[in-house]
Every structure is written in C-alpha cells, then in structure tokens.
Image 1 (cartoon, rainbow, N blue to C red):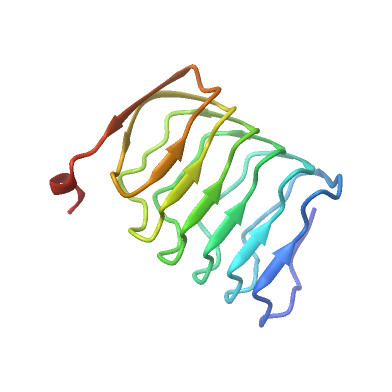
Image 2 (cartoon, rainbow, N blue to C red):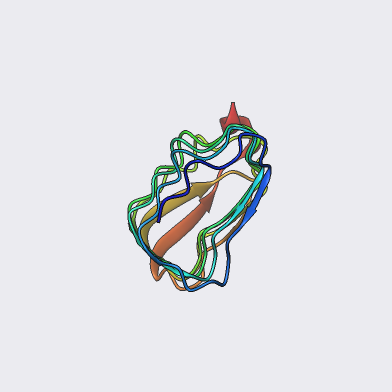
Length: 143
C-alpha cells in the first residue's frame, strides 16, 4: 500500500478498519502529520519507524500482521502515544532512547522477548509477550 503524494498540509490520517492488505511504507508521509491511524487492517511485513513525520503525536499500528524487529531509537520528539499491540513483532526493543514526550506505549500480544528497561514516565502494556520481562528505570538514569 502506497501512501505518498498526500497533501503537505495534512495533519490527520485515519485509515483504520478498512481491511487493507499488504505492506505499507511510512517513509513518505507529510511532515506536518500529527495523527496516524492504520489500525485493524490486514497490513503485513516489516515496518520502519525511523523516518516518521517530525510532528507526529499519535501512532496507531495495532491489529495488523506487522512483523520483525522494532527500532524505537529515532522516533519524532513530539510523539506521545504508540500503539503496537496485536501484531507479530519479535525480538528485543530498546526504550532507552524514547522521546521524553512518550507517555504511553502498548505492545501487548506480540512475540517480544528479553528484559525491557521502562522509563518511569511511560505507561507500558505487555500482556501476551510471555518472553518479555519488565524492569523499571530509576529517575536518575534517564539523563
């Protein structure tokens, strides 16, 4: 699925619950986009989160068939909420470089593993990731 050619002034893109099928690239989204919802479709494949629009505040990817590892080290500094649940993401994830604006991250019902160090300011949900252990970081380690 291609989402390039959207108006440069677009701030809100809601494509959830449409039964879209196939892979999607998030690398050509409008720079001013603040809200992206592609939840509850049948999208699949790996997804790159390192080139998201710099103004993005909320990201909804849940309820698809996305797979592979997650790179959360280069997210937009404006991002507040990330919904990744009910996919097939696997491997370990690094929350040590989350923007300080992130307050909610849902990654339930994936195949994540390892020990995850969670910043105290982030509400993290992990149900369904039986190989994932949480460890909450002390405030002093954040900076």
